Image (cartoon, rainbow, N blue to C red; front, top):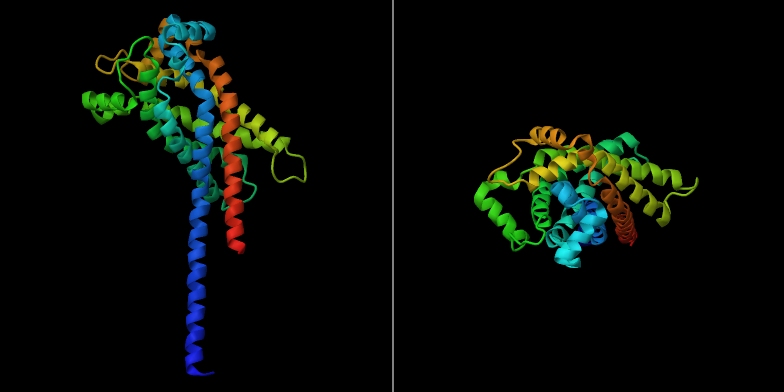
Length: 315
């Protein structure tokens, strides 16, 4: 072979290897980022359906007898503020919920790949552990976001804060970084088991509803499984969510509760054990449509990204 031809051949092989390496890196980035992107889409879609229910739930949990039943709370809110009052505090979650879902689904998807080494049929225990781990990670930013949301939702007929960023700014100014993470411990204690149950029950019901020989559940199965998974997680979550909401709604300058355990003791002493299930009906009413939509949008977005990535790899 002519030396010049051999040099050209080596250059071509080097270029091919460089291109393959670049394609591999791009493919890996898409693979690890796909769960984050799909979670972002699913979270934003789910919030659109659920915020009014969440407002009623928070007001029931933090205002006690002043709010009463779901219908009484809804009626009072509409009389004082109109329909827009049910969407109080939504701007901040709308920006942040995609971020939180992106964290959860992204951490969950990659944790599951790590635990089961990419096994196509991971065990339910691996799914639960990955969900619990992802829940704990997303609970850190979620506690601050929910603190702001609870403060804004608790304003019936008054506007102490101009908006979410004014609320966060004033909390930081008056109470420092520690004040911005009020309720972090109960948020973690709520989200670890809650998200583990959420994701494991969803997968179990999808598997049950998928006929033998089919690899993917139908959209109807995903809607039902996502909705029921959300309901099951709230049955597990609601007692500690009561504690979290009361801690966050408390006056930070002159707090009624010294700690999470003190909140549990005072709540039980004043209202009995039933207080820890307050807000469960409205939480379940909210959870079913929200999580149905979230999982379907997440699954369909993830499938689309994976199909697109697969097509690129074959070209």
